[in-house]
Length: 159
Figure (cartoon, rainbow, N blue to C red):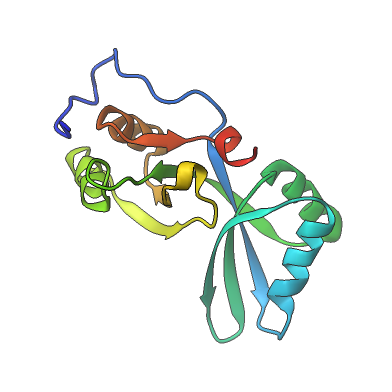
């Protein structure tokens, strides 16, 4: 696999579809707060596909990849739950060709910084998925795609 591909080449395409959105929520550090939020989502047929929890003294930052981020955003607005959203790059990792090292090398070759990452709970095709918050998600998707990685869109996760 050639990870030195020129990502500025106009013939290189990125995957079609809706980019994966992460919804972030601050929870009060209280026993059962995470379960209550997940139950609220479940009651509205929204699946949690991935999550990252970062605790501090008073609050917990909960980052979520959901089956329907738009519906979740509407639900959070209706319930008065403060939230933000951002675009993620979700890449499928494979043994031998498509390892974590090769993924990171492709991003390094494109000179892209990773702000944070976490694995997802779902595994389409039985391969692990890595959610990445990268400074330029479009360039990251192009770099990974041109290096032979499968970059997933929201439609790939929300089936």
